[in-house]
Every structure is written in C-alpha cells, then in structure tokens.
Length: 172
Image (cartoon, rainbow, N blue to C red; front, side):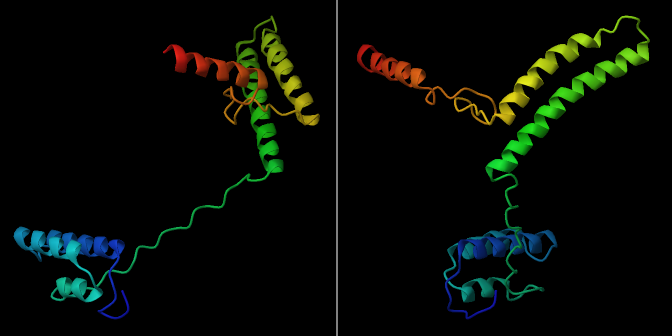
C-alpha cells in the first residue's frame, strides 16, 4: 500500500493484513495469542498507519500489495447473430453425434440390417425442422435459452396464470 499513514484503510486492505499475519504465524514468527491480538487490531484499524504498525516487526512488505484479479472474460456470443450461430452449432452436434456413434457401431458389428436408419430418420426430422425454423428466423419466444417454457410469455398462459393467481388469492 503506498500512500500516507493517515489515509483510511479499506476492508480489503484489512483482510490482506490479516492474511499476512496468518502467514507469519504459519512461519513461526507469531505466537497464537499474539496472532489473535494483531488480527483484532487489524480488523479495528482505521488508517494505513494502524495497519503498518501491526506489520512493522515482520519481514516483507509493510502492507501486502492488493491481489491482482482478472477482469471478467468478455462475454462471447452477446449479440443475436452469434447466439443463432451457437444454436446452429449445438443442433448440428446434436444431430451428428448419435448418428455417427450408431453408424460406427453398425459398421463394427457387421450387421446385415441397416438399423441406424431409424436413428437417422428421427434425428433427421428434428434437425430438418430446426433448419427450417433457423432459415425462416422463427424464434421460440415462449421458451428460454435452456428450452424450458416461459408461461408468462404466451398470451394464453398469461391469461390462465392471472386467473390462477386470483383463485389462490381469494380461495386460498
């Protein structure tokens, strides 16, 4: 901590001093009772000077430097285009994965009957519907990003929920 001893100490600075005191006790530089006394002094400290006095007889920096925290990672896929692209990638993986696994099992077993056709049929129908909706830019407004229904989004459901709420309120 650089600056004047008269500057007010923050909670984060007090916590860093407490961590430094605990480290010093772990190194064998402070006894348990002295550690407790200094920690209570650190938590009660008001200025940098108060904190520096607690660390004055310990080696190392007088006040530990603030921890370097990473800024939050930039949000990937924040715009609508990248969200649509991510949905397309997830649907494609969802179509290809079971089909490729089934084809590999069929090829490895050498079966005469081409049974993966059923997996291809049903996942193909699902993927085809998805692609049509994707190209037509039809969105599921009544579903959230995880596919769970939002009852308050559909007008019919809003009406039903409003009356359900009234029944609860008046009839218990």
